[in-house]
Image 1: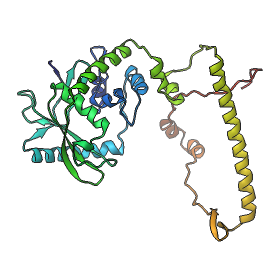
Image 2: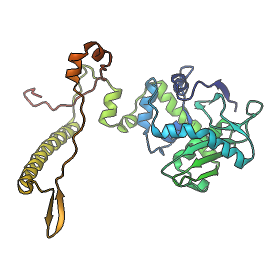
Image 3: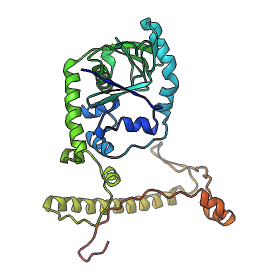
Image 4: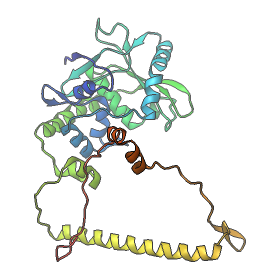
Length: 320
């Protein structure tokens, strides 16, 4: 099966993200999406991925982990080349095969002249110790199989700076069945995205904050059944319990404070059971004074946060 090479925009840029989101109006998936589809991602659910795929992507601020990986990619790729005995470069293309839109960290330097014979994936981790291919976590394996499938199953080597600060180069064992399943699941899931078919399972994977971000409030009214009303009762009980717990906490702290006074530690049978020590004050910014002194500058630096939804209980009289 053939693949298509598409000039790659700057990694992480808006255009790069959009290339991994849609191609000719069809939903496509980057290799890092595949662990989510296979249910082995420690970071995202299929429901989150679904709503990410129906929502235009935006550039996100670089995290410390992303920064570390970006800085170390070139030297780790060079080390993989030294160990494997050939030069690797980061290709200037993204590779499209069916619904897979894959970027590679490293391919042989002559990758444009012929189909590559090997792939290198660069990883840095503070969570894993990697000594052999058996140590590769499931989400990395899924990503590697997706990359391998672009070229019908060529070897994938991971060069890893692991939690011990050791560098190793290990080969991912091929799994033709997994590669075939990846093609099938991306097609099935991609069709549901193209049809905007939000199945119950997709929604079941989300929490209230995620649903609020994906579904903006309208004037729509939903009639609850008895099962939904049980959730209303649970929410009411939880909020009452929380309020009562906060009252009990305050009463206990007030009582202990009257005993401790200026003491910083309380003991029982000689063992410390509570401390009440001074904490240094925090600096704060007087925004009202700044606005009064520099109104124009205050306006230039004022940001309006995104809207959000608030869930309130309404009693039988309509009060909130």
